[in-house]
Length: 100
Image 1 (cartoon, one colour):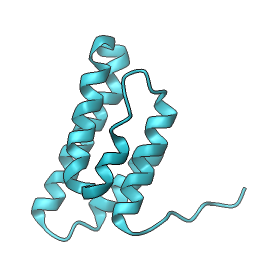
Image 2 (cartoon, rainbow, N blue to C red; image 1 turned 90 degrees about the vertical axis):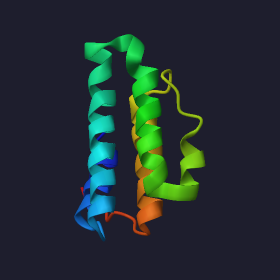
Image 3 (cartoon, rainbow, N blue to C red; image 1 turned 180 degrees about the vertical axis):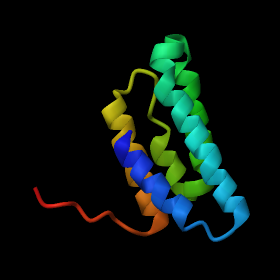
Image 4 (spheres, helix red, strand yellow; image 1 turned 45 degrees about the horizontal axis):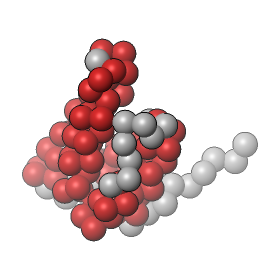
């Protein structure tokens, strides 16, 4: 979930107030639980992903609908890309890709 974390870290650093900062912290907690679910409790992956979507809703507003199609069966790389795209769009910036 590197892409998602990069977008979330950007949002966290630019939080305009304490309330928004705490919402980003909550998002990180939900994201960590989702990342750890396959090892800790594989049956909980879907629930943890729902928690991430819920945490994201308040941060990304109208773009939250784009995450509705994600499920426990969605590959992590697809979840990562969709979540990162929605977060970057809500932040109004796009990351500069490093040249390889």
